[in-house]
Image (cartoon, rainbow, N blue to C red; front, side, top):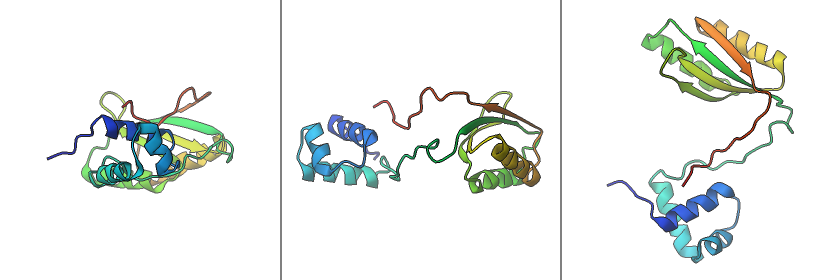
Length: 153
C-alpha cells in the first residue's frame, strides 16, 4: 500500500520546502503540533520516499556562475548504447543541472549553468566530442524570473 500524506503531512512538507534548516520545534509550532509527532511523520515520509535528499540552495551568481543556457538537442541516434553513453555523459557533467527527454521535434533539453559563454563553449565541445549529436541549439537565459523546487502542495 502506498503512503498517502494527510493534511498535517502536507503542512509539514510545505514548511520543509520553505526552509528545511529550521529546527523541529519551529516546524512543529508552524503546523500546530508538537515535536515528537512531527518527527515521526517526517521519518515515515522519508521511509516512504516522499522526502528525498536534503541539500542547500546556493546562490549561483554569487559564486560566479553567471550564465544559464537551455540546450535543445536533436539526435538521429536512438539505439540503447548511444542513449546509455549520452546519459552517462550528462550525469558526469556538473554543469548540467537538469536534463529532460522530450516528446516532439526536440529530443532532449538541458539546463546548463556555467560562469560565462566561454565556459559554455568548453562544455559544448566536450559534449560533442563524447557523443554524436545531430543538432544542438543553445539559448542563453537573459533573466531568471522564477525558479523553485517547491511542489504546489
